[in-house]
Image 1 (cartoon, rainbow, N blue to C red):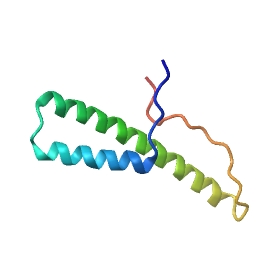
Image 2: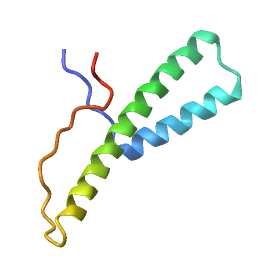
Image 3: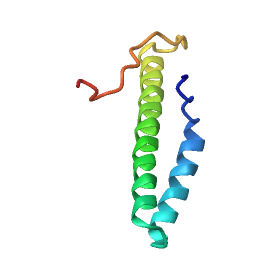
Image 4: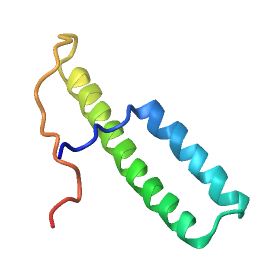
Length: 82
């Protein structure tokens, strides 16, 4: 079974906003709320990872002092040392 691809950053944020609105409405059953909360946590982690990657790319570009070539960097998620 293949793992589904992660949503783009903008898609993740839009879905997260939708989840927040649904949870804030208070019209969901407990089980539905828990599933949405779990998905929200997953989307938050995806978004944080994408932001960290973008920040690293910007930092690498800034450190190159005018030479705008991207350099490789590690893409391991932070805090994933289980």
